Image (cartoon, rainbow, N blue to C red; front, side, top):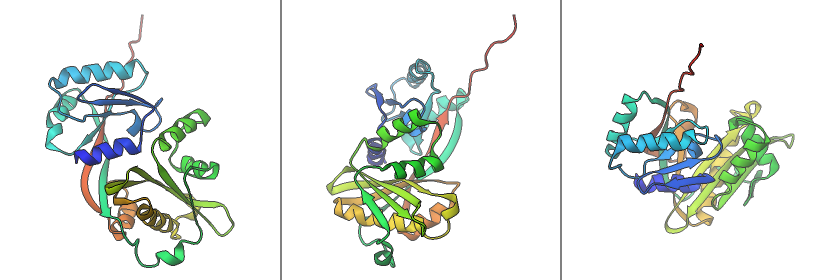
Length: 257
């Protein structure tokens, strides 16, 4: 699991990072939970003190303290402290993995309309941001910096009228024997859903991982999304772990005279 945590960190690289030696504190002006969360890379010697220091670090940036906590025994002490301090649990997420190789039946006929690029185009960013983004141009520019933080492949498929229908990203933080690729940013325009576009993007990225010399693939999907989980399971992905976000509750401001 530790290897996947490092890969996930490399594939979604926050612009600001502070390594305490035990934890990595990440910030990106509030753009996405992942890029604005603590990665508890190792068990802290003094967990309560580390939690206090992390809360102060985020408070100085006007951000809530958030932890990306994988479901492993190593994080038991951290979870206990966060429970005592009333941190919420949010967005339970499955980590799914498969070996690279043929993407599955029907992939050859579906590849013609899929456009692949080494950088996200304006159309690619607009579609993804319209589905998953929150904020305006400044936040979108921060998201673009995150997405281009490691070598990646960006897939886009168009509907019959030529407008972008679905997109996806293959992050390749490590190549060659033992290398991994991560599938991110799978997004389909609402009016284009249930027409097979997401499957076309997924197959193109799986096949693209072979050319990128990534030996294994991983992806992340929320536990509350059965449709996406079924799509990924059909493509050969299996669950290898889980994580949740732990976020501090907003502090109530003092009122009155």
